[in-house]
Length: 279
Ligand code: SAM
Image (cartoon, rainbow, N blue to C red; front, top):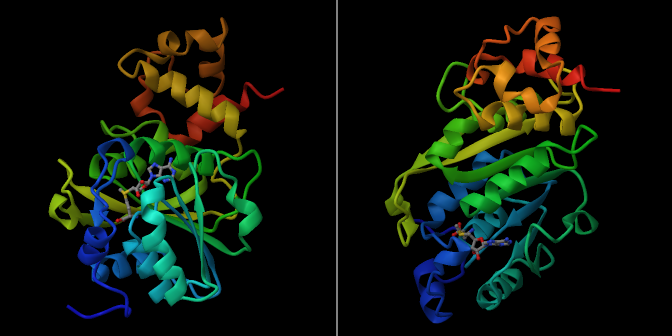
């Protein structure tokens, strides 16, 4: 296996810092540095870009990002046990790695980053989807980042790229495809991680569009879509009842049959429905 840097192999790093994986923090570490470099390449040309990495752990992906030429990496890690391993990487790449110990859901990374900015992460499922929705739904667009390269459970990745009429189609598909070009770039078997998770994983690449595909206010679209898919088997006139007594008129006004189910409705039609709630 070829070397990507002069630092010790990840297995040795994990052993020497006694980084026994903690389930509560969703720790499934990538050990193959050729693979982490490959994931970094999914993010595109990183030279001249700052990269925000959430959850660097022992630093496999961090090393991939740095060896692939990221101008700077800002890494936010909740588990203080990982900090000494990350400090070794910072030493090997002087001035290019800054580590913040903290919860990525609480830390505002913007003060530490200079555009253009790419985001790259291998995160636990819950934190990952919450951050993805946050990154996709700022009031203003374009956002502070240009691309997102994110590892998810394969089933979540399929929800991001799903099309209407499929079981996987829902909130994540609509919010992702509304404002980005999204694709699955890589799928990985459980054995790529230590310890191996129960399911396959996939790396999704999302590229911010200069403007959303259809006009809508993010908060309103998010609420309409979340409500519609909360009871996805019901007809929309029933599942959306909570949005107002005149929901049937609104559906008719934008050409959505009130007897339709959410999973049949296009992104364009959801945006049109969301616009009827704008003041
Ligand atoms: N990036 C490493 C890799 O690919 O091997 C580690 C990936 S592991 C799936 C997830 C990492 O996210 C762990 O290091 C964990 O401690 C960290 N983490 C979990 N929740 C976090 C949070 N809320 N904020 C920041 N880091 C978090």
